[in-house]
Image 1 (cartoon, rainbow, N blue to C red):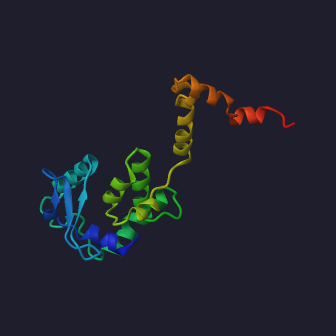
Image 2: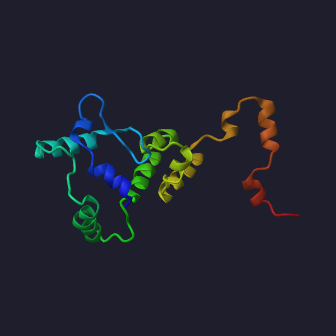
Image 3: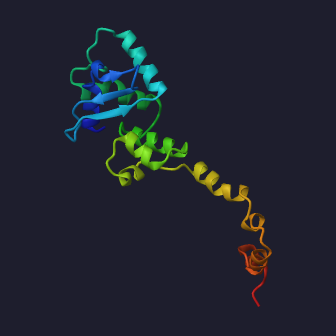
Length: 175
């Protein structure tokens, strides 16, 4: 768990969350020493609205004295242990977030902005594609009409017909 991320989480005040008009929350001072804005999806807004209704007088979203050790000991470790997950860290959730967005078809530039990265290269290290996703991507070639089916000009068709394909090279014995 990165202390900076936990610090952002546990010092976030309700006055910096807009659940109505912008669907964003503001991080007034990040580890880079600047103000940043985080876009929320409908599930995050719903969860935060529910939390706000439960603790309407709270100034902080997740108040906790000694937040880092408190959070780790009282929440994170018991949850991870109960789920029987080994070698899993708070920061891994950022990788999950990036990977799921990319596999859902969100472009890497947008994912980079959602992660608040300055460089797309940083985001590329976060987005891990699953084996089924890669297999489905490869299978798209099977579902796409071949070049010979889409080209209509006879001269081009003759040239394509004379060009050996992988299947003809593999099936014909070498002489």
